[in-house]
Amino acid sequence: MSTKGEIREIRLQKVIADNAVCSRREAEMLIKDGLVRVNGKIAELGQKVDPARDMIVVRGKALSKGHPKEPMVFILFKPKGYICSHSDPYHESTIFNLLPKELAKTKLICAGRLDKDSEGLVVLTNDGAMANKIMHPSKGIVKRYRVMLDKPLDERIIPKILKGIHDDGEHLYAKRLILAKAGPKASQRLDIHLDQGHKREIRRLFERFGYNVIKLHRFQIGSLILKGLAKGSFKQLKKQEIDLLFKN
Image (cartoon, rainbow, N blue to C red; front, side, top):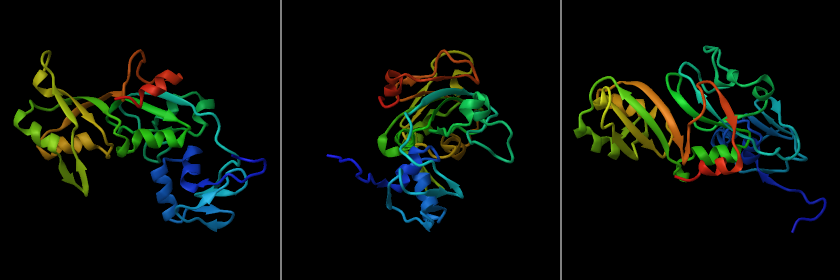
């Protein structure tokens, strides 16, 4: 049982993530790279701190002392042509430009990015632990995508996509693949389900077998479906909607 005046120590990477600086995995890399200081000293991975008392500096910027504010979770319909970073010297259009100024200034993490040429559902939150839970492969949260290929899919490669490939030291695979049954260019359209989140994973998978992805739309994370939002618009989630993110 906690007592008055007791020092509450938490792992440093969790504190950084909870302050929405980055995900927990990214925080671990920052610590390993010597980019985090605690009370003036270079931090060590696994170090515990008291966020109410210790001065924590990440890449030269001090975190606010105290424990994190109430979690906020938003979903946004990302249009094609936008990146999911806060800033990039090579791209002016970021998803954070789509938010009101007062919200864009808050520390929000994009929990599961989409590349510039993709569109669809992204989750934004100030809760680093929640972002980590959504993104980490060990949690097994399924993300569902609608894909258009540049030519009809040879169904003989479907088992190979489900089994997966090794590319740049990563195992890339689809958890499930569902072909379109009707409609224009049905042989080029499919839904693909992933339970991990490597960079450009779907595009890399199909490129290995000689296909280009010409349209990629994420329409679902967990049991939360993107509906009722126009491209470029967003909304804050209620608790029952947040819970859907963690139910496959």
